[in-house]
Image (cartoon, rainbow, N blue to C red):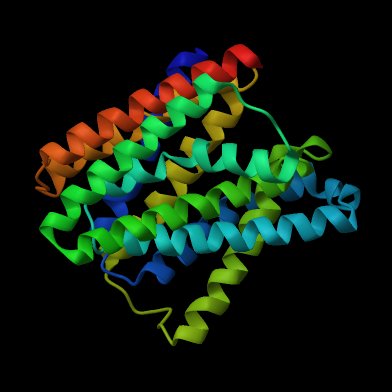
Length: 287
């Protein structure tokens, strides 16, 4: 398969994530739990046949990092899915794309990495775009602004998930690491829904379909294809392509969910995408 075609399919797949979450009527924790549970079950045959021997290669430190990554991923899904109950698909998905900036902050504070003035300036531009979106949502309602806040916290959590895993994947395959972290995340979400007293069943047939589709398209097909294209395309190219996710999600939300597109979302989203594109290009040149 052409890697650019695979990248396009991956972006299209992840663009459906927010739409499927919005269509589901189950609580956020339940949606997240079944998304990861079905993902783990779909991965299980391949893992047992080809990769189970790699479990012996995981060191104690790697297990601790994987557990932390799994917990962070679990709460990323909970908060991001919850944000969609308060704010629009457009606002939520655009704000979650600020992940490279959270990674920049994490790399600076924890790994003492240095960044160019151009990268810092473009980061400031992207943050300004998030304020434009939040200002527009605040004019609608305080609850929409609360949804924006949840999306930003979810963005910070997924950055932590990525930072925890960056050293582990150097020693084991991405399949094994993904399977382990998704399993830990599913267990975390199971405990979460039990503590909250949320029922594991019954749910409408449509909800079960959405759970399975979330596992297949944005999780397995989307992110797996991104990992596969790393063999041929640069990280910067893939990261810039992922920036198209909120564009696709916003268009889908307009046609499927009848969500209006506000001028503040268009302006703020454009500023964020310009800032992030400049940031990623600056980092690509330095790398």
